[in-house]
Image 1 (tube, chains in turn brown, purple):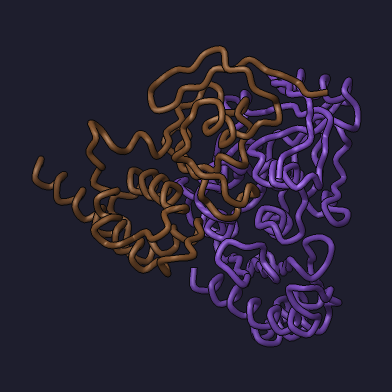
Image 2 (cartoon, helix red, strand yellow):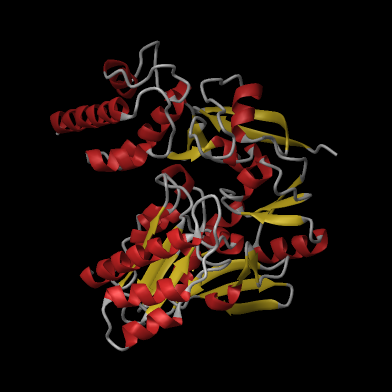
Length: 165
Length: 272
């Protein structure tokens, strides 16, 4: 028998009450099919490719390895939260500037991976960024440009913080 | 790639979770971080009829406490919390081993207790628990018991836990300032083909990927005890094991990896 649950999720600062989901629905499926947030991509659906990476309470997590019901009460952020007022954020602009995407399927996952990581590690070295991106698969770029983009974005953010000081 | 239907339950406290699992019977499973279980459910390799979500117990069971040389980890502590913990030299081996566990988005969700209960033979926490002589604190219907890590792992994904028993804490009873873990996989973050861990002070050698469970190798430990070289220790380990052959590598390959990795682990442990 298929069990239905009533849950509420907070996604990109917006609370969605009275979501009727099946207990077996993963977070990525609910984001895409119930909330229409199709920026988060479902790739391998067993935690290997990283396309579904979102932020849970600020930390990168695989939305295919979390049942939606488990995410209740946590702050969820998807790729849709990055751009504001029709403008891409600095990380997205860096990906564009460095040609860090070709087909774009993996890109939302890489963006959320990097966004969560740089918040925790603003001073990350290139070696640490290389290690980080092993979390996601990209079959187009060969990763070098992704590492360049993340490094450039981190550098830009450090400069900005320095100027504020 | 969609899990089979199941009924979802939320645990409010440990005692309630244990009662519920007892009531639901063997088709029920706990879910902590779910980083192994959900993948297995997506493949339908696991089809539990009930899941009891322990996520609500994080407040109670996610902690890292150093009580004067005895380290206690709450079962719901994530790998990433340990990775970021200000552990002293006595337990830095744990922090440094975390980088081997999957990738960052896995480590932010996966838990110490979940990893031990899953009992994968190359899992870093399983090796570390055996290496450091940890005790696993378990709560069941009969109350609380303490299981030495060496007695926890019985076979492939099979532990000494009763179906309703839940790991609540892992106790590392002694510091290990000269210990290290290293491993090899074809791709960063994959399951290790072979993992090697050593504690030079305790003269303990533990291997993963060469047996159904994390394996202590007395022959290699004896070499350390008599002051032999690291190469001799590694050679003794490679000669003593009877590793499996599968798609990831043959027995000779695993023996060769053992020799290389154990020397690396010994050198890393000595450098600390």
